[in-house]
Image (tube, rainbow, N blue to C red; front, side, top):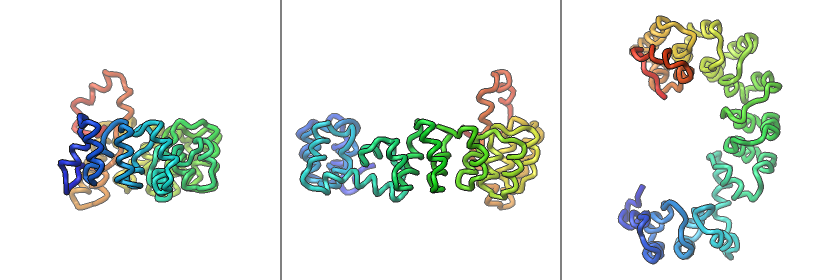
Length: 298
């Protein structure tokens, strides 16, 4: 990405070989500042100071963490202008308010509190952001997030595979609309739980169930006649279907696509489903699929 009005100055600012005095001069130009703030690695203190002088709070937003020295971080933290002093923290907080993903390091730096305290804070949007980005959190913190009164926080806590859901929370999570689809995608399901999820009639939940790698052959068989082409695509990629069934299911979705079905088109071209189980299969078994006519992403 370059500055459209003055791409040369922007490019020079990104040039790793540009000497310090040139970078200081570039900081006086908007296009130069654009390039400098996109450079990789730590900026020299003199360059960071020039950016603050000429770019103000707009530049200060990008001068944080490893981008600047510890001395410059202190300089910014003690700056007499609150717009500069608080630029990065205000930016992160505004992103949290808007639900824009921010890394856990950014949250810690902006709020000045350790992750566990942020996860227990009063703002549900902040708790949800922590749940979304602090992937290696302790299970005690995860349990508290799973019990959170805000459904958005509970949903964020189960959006990724790690740190997971303890077995004693399976039943309640599978019954919670806020997390139902997230956990239906990953948890081993009993026949009773499988039946309960099918009765929800929720498209997102049914698609998650169809992609669950722990389904039994009987469960997969019950999904084969689903009216949803995405569910049938997921079933077609299951380890439990025969090549003939796979061919039939995929051919059916392709025919629906040819007839103008948008759902079938999306299922064929944008579906996240793929035969992940094949990656762990013995080499001899994987080799049997070399001549398979169906291609899957991944």
